[in-house]
Length: 42
Length: 143
Image (tube, rainbow over all chains, first blue to last red; front, side, top):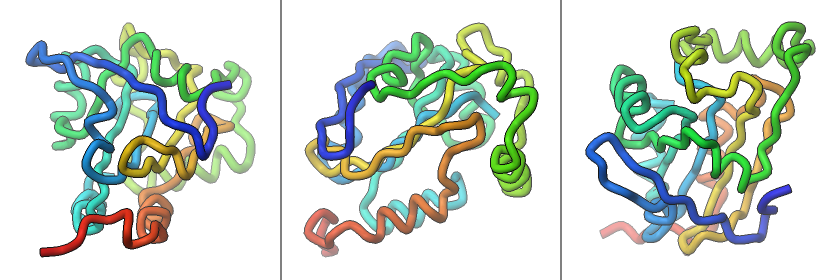
């Protein structure tokens, strides 16, 4: 079912075009964040 | 969303858009819209599953509900109509449903929306309202 409101968002590691690996948690490490999960590009 | 980014910045709220493409696809498509810096590639949809975002059916894609049609029209009016090239990328699951979350500094999810239909994603104005409603202690103090 995944995370619920009040829970901690799961960590996610991803690679960008430069080859650098980043963590999703860097988004909210210093400030609140809005995150969208989109269906497709466009 | 691109037009609203400065408003989130003013509020001290970071924005991230997770997309289904590879790093290269993400850089190319998001770069075209000037939002490459906020796009996060997830070609295996690991974070979608971790957030509990479900998949819809072909029936719902081909025959959307009245609400789905209304949301599609809304998205189209906002300049976000479906891009077939983007939708049909190798790593893109057409049946994947969208979602959104507001996460406090530190990682606690304070608001979560799991899309129930393909176009069910809150518009930027609603996300801004949620960001504004956060207690001021959550936001960085201005200099």
